[in-house]
Length: 114
Image (cartoon, rainbow, N blue to C red):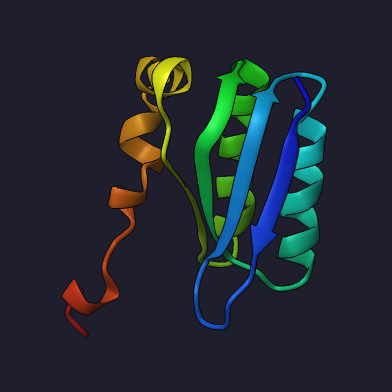
C-alpha cells in the first residue's frame, strides 16, 4: 500500500500531518523528511492524524519519537491522534499512547504564571 504524508498549516495552530497507508522502514524517511522540512521552516508543534494509517512498525514508532525530539529542542511537541486497530495497539504496547497522544498536550491556559 502507498504511504502518503499531507499537511495543513494555519497561523497560530499546530501543523496537522495526515498519514495514510503503511508506515514502515521504506516509508519512514518520507515522514522524517516532512518533519525536518517543517522544522526548518520554523514549525514547532505537530499534530499527526493517524486515522488512515493502517500499519506502523518500529521504524514508524521511531519516526514519531524522533519528530517529538526534534520539535522539543525549541519548546515544541509532536502528538498523535486518531489511531485505531493495529496502529493503536502498537502505540499502547510501546507506551507511546500515554506519551504522544493529543490529550497529553498541556493546555497553556491551565498553567499559572510565575
